[in-house]
Image: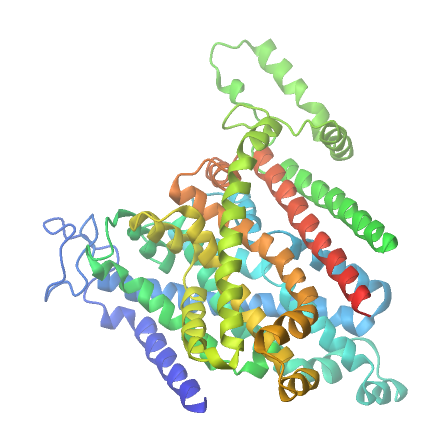
Length: 268
Length: 287
């Protein structure tokens, strides 16, 4: 199991390095169009061929990986912080505050995730610059994706509230923000880390779903969602199999994230 | 039991009122709320434009807007869709049966495959299935729902198969863990040592233990299938609620979109509450 985790970690590292270094590794810019070669098959010039307007698919895959792999962890960090604040504080305070926070959490959890995402996305402007659309998409994921983590963190904080450590701290006169920041939050770190790592593949897949539906990152900026949108033009799986490369890469990355987590962390 | 049902119903009513108010405020504060397409008509005189403007004035007051919205909703008037120019209630009535059919078939198939494989992997004689089940569910968990919908179109597979493939990994993973835990419990080991047959153990000793948890999962799987309906219906060209939600999102048809969200939330809550009440009743009987 440890070997598999190391292998998954190594794969993630390679993909992250390739994504961060997209500007150096990619043969062309993601928006550069080779009008003489639209829909080209893989060649020495274009390793994964070109799309219907002649853009190099390999370069777009690298840049798209960068967008998804940098912004999904940022969104996961934001959602974990919100979850820590809402779930952690509610669990720490208990009583009516806990019930109120969990009521709001239940409301969020009762909405099917994709319905919630497209409803909120529709409220935001759709015709914005590609950079703004990427920010809006991942910011929305971060701001809406905290509910499940908050529930787990609330349970963790509740258990800590009754622990000897916190009871003793209270007896010594530690209260409020100091109790939460110094005694509760550091002890929630393993749960926070697990929730952060679990959220990343969820947000990557959500962005892909939104991108395919045309509600994600705007063109010409690539993301895994917009790259997978190309599958709409497929007539059979054997027809232009290189179009499946972004899907394979996405599956490898999501699987690696799941492998990096130990079963204990997943169930934490 | 009755108190539990009443508590669930009260929670559902509270959630729907709160959710409805939240949705109404989203519509109220969205940009372009108080504008009307008719105001762009160059043939309208200044007086007509003023009259149109006045007709929206009552909606600007937030509390008045909430009350009107709730009153109308209670009478079954969910407003009019901007993009389709039809009453939202009739649109939902027309589209919901298609989504229900898709979900029912997808859920039935997903549960059949998931539970079938989970039972096979849990039984010692069929441990060879374990790898197949784990690998298949692992792969499917890594594919976005929209890609499964696209692939079902490419290979000419029915749309409910995509729903089934989305539901299957969750059902399989959860029920496999439940069954593995149940099979390793002391009373099952004793039953096996006493020479009871595998099928008898499964039917008489394992299923009653795991059934309440599986019922809870059934409630959750309704929400999963509903969520999957958006990309599947949109990309497979099916005229259901999911497709309607997608069209509403692209057209920024907020009255339609928020009402769909409220209805979908209601369905999800009813499914989860129903599953919870049933599993509670089952646990009570066992106790």
